[in-house]
Image 1: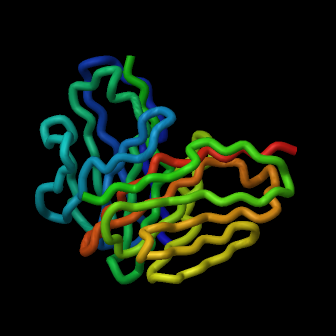
Image 2 (image 1 turned 90 degrees about the vertical axis):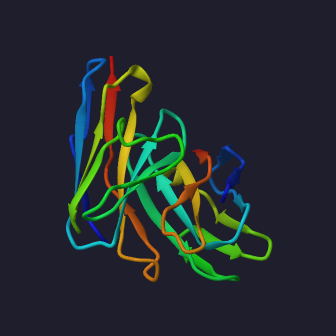
Length: 115
Length: 111
């Protein structure tokens, strides 16, 4: 298994500000993803974090709002920009070693509350 | 586009009873995942089902996959209170590792 650490674990933010969430994996992984889980809801994929290149965003998510970096195989960041109360969610980092291995692991999540 | 649907969405049951959560998916999926989420916590991987007819068991939980019917089930045997949680199934479109999640089933097991 992979151990995934996220920081911050929670934060309270003011409207209009931006916050960067960090995701660190304890071993090299092929794939890294960012998900959002709104209160009481399921998980929605925001984007695939690609090492050394621009992230691949899902429909409804754009780079200006959710810029993502992945400078190496074990680290990624997600920024939530110009936050509004609608951005209050849990943001989860996920990682896997490749299609053949099957498993995808999740970090503890970062719970953001926007006032 | 892959869609994943679970039912029921809410399930309240008594300890000692058996029940099944169903997970239907709309198009071919390489594999089917089951996760558990406790309140305020992240997702814990329970099972990864890789092929048609796959069956995996861990304690009181057993998961199976029927790719022809595009159906996976999570069966709970002789439920205990500790199994109270939200259970998610997820699939991935062929050739992709990103997951599409079902709505989740909130399971409450009463003494």
